[in-house]
Length: 577
Image 1 (cartoon, rainbow, N blue to C red):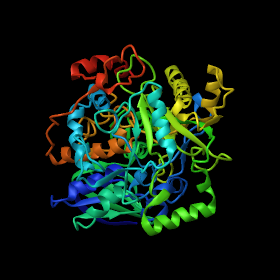
Image 2 (image 1 turned 135 degrees about the vertical axis):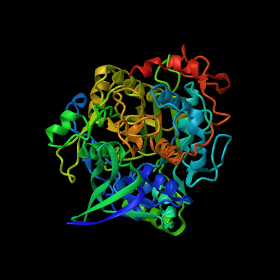
Image 3 (image 1 turned 180 degrees about the vertical axis):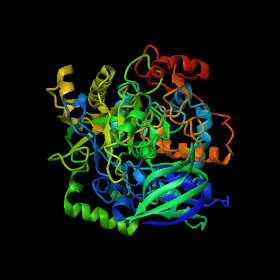
Image 4 (image 1 turned 90 degrees about the horizontal axis):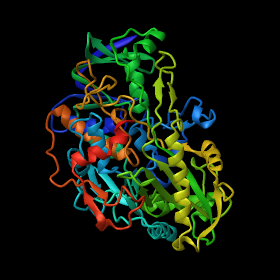
């Protein structure tokens, strides 16, 4: 049974990170009628709001689609866990809350790959507009909707890790989201007043006070509707009934890097052969839909702690209950942090102009999913590469709208990825042998002191490497034949249809992906409304002066500013991938 048809100016598919931003920006002060369709439900829950409980919503069916990859050929056929947020806020309601803008050169790489107008100077004003950053800074925003804070760093291990990295020859950075991205220092998190500041909290909930904005949850979009090559609306299912909504201006697809290509394909937009194989009529053949899938991989290098200063005593049920009670009463204490309070960004080798390795330090020895705890005091660093050359895909399992897609990243199928991941382990070990960590560093738990050869490390990588949950690129922005959207996020070859989410990123950024996704949606909203902010007057592109000869640079003072032409030339390796 089909219910009555309603008409809006804009229909946004998905109330995830990008969809929440778009809902607010397209509806505030515009008088426009906006409909947001979300397949999940409410995000209201203590385990979502409490930062330290981050692994709980990630392992809960209510908030996570529960996807796994196809057997990964580069990892001996392992199926890798692929959490994707379900409900208001999307993955920003289940992620680790790490706030990392990425390196300014990431956006120069985007532009060089065809995303014209997405240079660092173009995107910086949107980072500033969205941020309410603790402490501020010359390149930071302090009045935006997204609360960005630092942890208290009370645990001595946080400082010892950074000091050890500096002793190993790396730069210290007081703020890795400011001018000095490369180096080690405090990390930031999307937490405000002791609670998770998801995209739903920052953007969607305030926007819902506007009567022109309507949110419909539990709404599974079956397809986008077309009149010829023009998107006219959306068909969706809710509690077994079919609904149709028309868009007077545009349909905007913001279902994320996995589901956006799926919805396009179910609507007849994608590789013609795949659509034909599932009996779907081709509205527009676009070979790039669902291809070019990228991600960040991580593993942990883990040690016993020789002094009783780690978080281990707080892992018992009674101790967790005390943390929870204090958080409920005060929004403070160990419940009010994601515990990734220091970290770093480095280059894996000389000849790279900006970092390709990221570190998240944790004063606890625990498995990646939080389910397995070491038997005693310990610590670890989550470390992984940020510009893997492996590429995967998202494909339909069938045309049933309730079916989850087939996803394969082809992790570790490019030989360079092995070189870089081995460097992650060896460079981490070097940091932990420095004097600043000497009093704390005990036996190596993972990979283990016996794992020294390339073959040993490769075996560990195949067994233990995990997704950092940063998929992107499946509806890539650009101007070449395999690009899906143009630099204004419009689906190439169609009218009144845009894709605005991490799927359109031409390249994964050098850091956690949520901040760039929010920024992307901020700028895209202004593209839709034709009111772009001017370029930033000050948007430096900083590189270590000796980047061609040295893998690490200890002195910030030796950094120098590059111009765009110079940078484009040195990014040639990345441009060819």
